[in-house]
Image 1 (cartoon, rainbow, N blue to C red):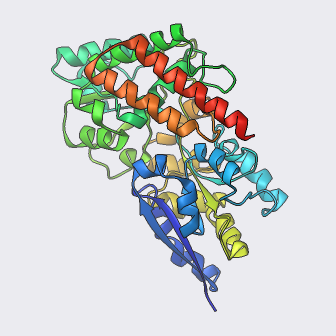
Image 2 (image 1 turned 90 degrees about the vertical axis):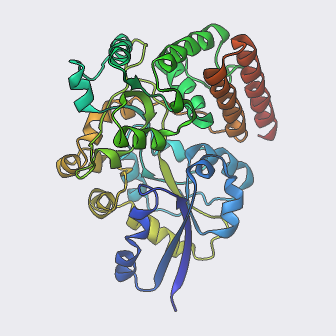
Image 3 (image 1 turned 90 degrees about the horizontal axis):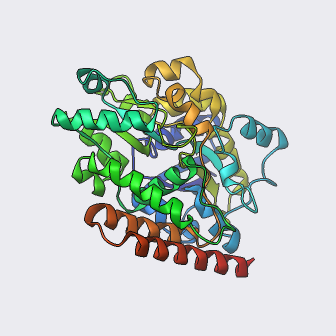
Length: 389
């Protein structure tokens, strides 16, 4: 009898292909287990309630902020009692920045399948035409942006709702004031105003359409036209730097205005979890361990379009040669990435702030009213979370 495991991931070559294309290889090693993967949109990946997915699927690829919801509802398995100690130790050693830690919140609810954070990106050919280099400081970003505008070109800053929230988080952390639980506010008013000033300066140098884009739309636009020279902050996608991409984008560490320009980028990535309703837990654990073998991540997983979640793959010379040095060129940033709060209720408050900032970047408005609204919503979410636990 063959056991069927049903999984749900996100709809992008980076999220779906490295899992779906390797199920046959897994089943050859484990003939009694078959895995089928479905996909949902990138937007749903960031906001769809994890408890809904856990009712319908055995395996879930999730965003780490959902660990707070999983802890409250018990809809995902705590993996720590299910996995051998040596494997758990391996995942800790293999963590890229805080990736493994990000799924550990009152229980270890996922493994780091995919690692990412906000990074910078450019068209190296266009940067060279402007007689410039990839920026290493915020002032150099502004200088490159001014040169681009003088030449009729642009920066781009993906600022759709979710990404606007992430921009605030990155900028605040880079300045040394990360969003954290217990502060009473999302970001203190003077720092929040400074963050918005920095983002406004970048938005004014960025192609206007990017205020409605996510990173994928932004990189697609960079690849299909010659208007966009540089993106200062966006979640990195190694697919656009790979051999065969035309044009091949170059990714780099962020260049923020803080004391350490490369620090504070908000952590992203994706982790594989097991539903609390899964009826074949032993088989799901077998598959989980198979996907997260370092040798698999650095070969078949990466070759199928994946962005590995393990450090050995990030520093592998072959992976970097094929991946346009994406991994080694952004490793400094992800090693210093910012891990956002994960309590149950954080996501709605964070998304609300993102909507406010997105609208403000597009249309202007009362900056202080925005800050007050965002901080009040966050404070209420923190208060509710405290009452739950």
